[in-house]
Structure formats: structure tokens, C-alpha cells
Amino acid sequence: MNRMAGVLARVPLFMLYRRLGWPRLLPLNVTLSPSPRCNSRCLTCNIWMKREDELTLDEWDRVLASLGRAPYWFTISGGEPLMFPHVVELAELAYRHCRPGVINIPSNGILPSIPERVERIARACPESQLIVNLSLDGIGAEHDFIRGVPGNFAKFEERLRQLLHLRDTLPNLTVGIHSVISTFSVGHIDDLVAYADRSGADQFITEIAEPRVELDTVGLPITPGREEYARAVDRLVAYVRSKRHVGVARITEALRLEYYRLVKRILEEEDQVIDCYAGWASAHVYADGTIWPCCVRADEIGNLRDHDYDFKRIWFGEGIREVRRSISAKECHCPLANASYTNMLHDLPTLTRIGTRLIAGGRGPA
Image (cartoon, rainbow, N blue to C red):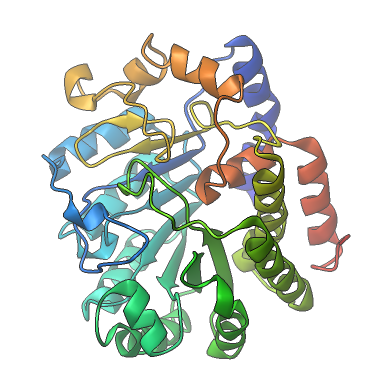
């Protein structure tokens, strides 16, 4: 809670930074993508086709050392992040240098080594809340079809059982289910909600499928229509409001409730709706050392290999200025979930609603 209080104390400073360029701050929310390699073949993603000159573990060590204690929330993404052979060591480096409050890892649940790696990360990072969200885009054969891997659903259920067993022995582990709401899955949201509700998972979270440069999906018809997604959102909001979550899941679900409403408005209004802080409070480090403000636009503002692995040289340099101007001018709008969490913390009406809901024990205003 002390770390979270420190995050909230920095909110006014980030608001000044975005508006005035001062004080200069490193991001709160950082996504690390150590490799695009993936053993899924999802209909909504083509990242598995990519191959990069990936940073070595020694290079990651220098990058994370340059970030210091600034980041509060790390997401280790992919590809399939738990397929990266040094994912445990990468999490250990992030913990050693940055002491984040949260380490978030999405996974497709295919590899049998997942529970062992999750346990090692949780034990190596005792002061961080480790959140592992297993991907679920359908029930049974529907999931296998969307994910492009026969037998994936059976592996998902096995990994979920294993991780829930681990959770009972590891107080810093949260286990969730994550669904991408796409043109392929939007019609069976009720089935996903019902499954998640009886699964024993700590949380059920979703995000909307969207074109991203990172995923090589620009131009693909994967985003559901406004009306379809609005109906799905209404169902998700009703589900979240019906539950009483505990621990870190209580905070993430309060954020999710606001996120669902925000996405609905972004699709309707085709506008940022609230200010975007990608490029100020959130950042993405791609596998080859390139820094992006976000993975949707994937503006290449500099490569860490060209700047002695010092994140600050790029973040406070000249290359990011035009991107920040563009984002500030609302020349883009997207419902990227990871950045949206940070954005919502910097929007006072949204932050007030989240706080009210948490104080009310999850029964805040509709």
C-alpha cells in the first residue's frame, strides 16, 4: 500500500510533465517484450511470425538498472512470455533493480513448464504481487479454433488447476483468466463469464482485439462492432459489479470496470476520451531494444543498444518529442488496456469513481 500511495503522489507530477515538460519522470508502467516467439497461432495475432535480434540477459540487466525504482507495474509480454528461456531471470532482474509492486504475465497456458516457472518467479520476487492471467477465448473446441492449437483448452484447464494449487501456497500470486473480445468471440461472452465465475480464478479480465503494429494486425477485421461490443461490455460490467473481490484483484477489477466503460466511449466517440499518458507514464521495451510509447502505434523513439542501454537517454531525448506532441494532440485513440490503466489514474473523475468503489467494498456507483 505504501508503494501505491507513492504512485498516487506522483500523479500530479505526471500531469505537469505531460502539460509542461517538467518535472522529467521515468514511467510508472513498463511492458517488457523479451521475445515475439509464440506457440499459439491465434486468429487475432501474427506476432508469432516475427523473429528479432533479441536483447541478451546481460543487456536486460543494464536496461533495468537504468530504470531504477521508478516503475511500479511491469508486464512481461510476448509472444508467449513463459516460453522465453530466461523469463525467470528477467523477472529477478526487474525485481532486483526496480522492486515493482506488480509483475503481470499473460500466458496461453500451453507449456507444461509454466507452473514451475511461475513458482520460481513468485518466490524470487516476494515483495511484488505476481499476476498470471491465462488466456481463454472460447470454451472447448471454440477456444482451440481461435487459438489455432488443437488441445489448447485441455492444457488451459490443466494449467489453471496447477496455478490455483500454487496460489494456495504463495501469498503473492494472483491467478486470473484473460479473454480477448474479438469478432470471433464477442458472440459467446456469456459462456466465458459463466466459465470464469465457476473456475476459482481470482479475476476475469478482458480487452478488446485491436489492430497493433506490434502484433502485425493492422488492417485485419478483428475488432467487434460498436453495438456488439457495447452489449458485451454491459454484460461484463454487470458481472464485475456482482462480485466481491479481495486483495489485489479488488483493485484490478475496479480498474477494469472503468476500462470497459472507457472502451465503449472510445468506440462510440472515436476519440481519446481521457488524456493518454503513453510516452510519459507508460512505456514498452521491445525484444530488440527499441523503446515505444505504446505497442499500438509502436513509434520507434530510439534503440537502447544505440544509447548505452540507458533508458533515460531516450526517454528524455529529442526523438520522443514529436510522438508526445501527436499523442497530446489526440491524433490517435485506442483502447489499449495496459496504457488505459495508467491513463485512468491520471483522470480525476475516473480516479474518484475507483476510490469510491474501493471504499464501498466493491459496490460503488454504477
